[in-house]
Image (cartoon, rainbow, N blue to C red; front, side):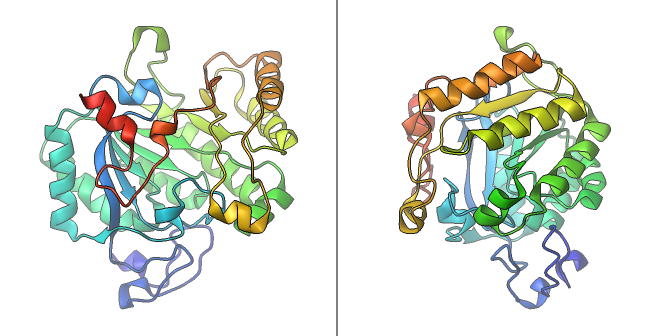
Length: 309
């Protein structure tokens, strides 16, 4: 837990003494805050399977993107504080419900708690995969620590355009930092395996990179794809999403305040084919409104309740 002192857990390296109650750039102290713990069916099929992905959504975020669909927790810090014992109990409940993995969503700023939880669960004999579900904006020198416990990495790659990164999350270094972090994730775990979406095979290990297409910024998406192709080749597993929906802050700022169009998404899909990517999840129907979250509810996703019936 000493890592909460003069905090350097994320690329902001803000130096806040979160252990003493100071608030970091992530918006959180060292008091671990959980917004939701549930079997989630809104992830890619290789993670949700038939019983769901055991998601633990952590409050706060080092990225602070103003358009985040999880803004209630990333920017609004909705959630409840849990101690190590309560966090372990939540994870145990998810495991006992039959989920296919433990999915730590936005975990980097609470890594000391998560590392201790993983150590305890492995000591108890748990073998299900642990999944690091993140913005991609990770301190590269932390990835080796994550890889000691995580089986699967699912980072975003949001921005290839430094100016867009600066406008959205106030750090133009996002592209270089994220690329360095993903390199280390791939070096540690390889590409996601097994990759067999047609059979419903569940992922056990490796890296899948997500990218959300932003309306009005297709060139950014095309640059992301070209960068990933040049760095990792055509076999890198991708999930390229069209589900963007503007939140209140988008309208207030009059920025990125509409949905993606079919023409915009088609341009992105055309480049995926042109670059020869072979292992790709696409989202041609622009997402499912039942998986837009409301973190004021015990289960934020209406779609989860429908799948569990």
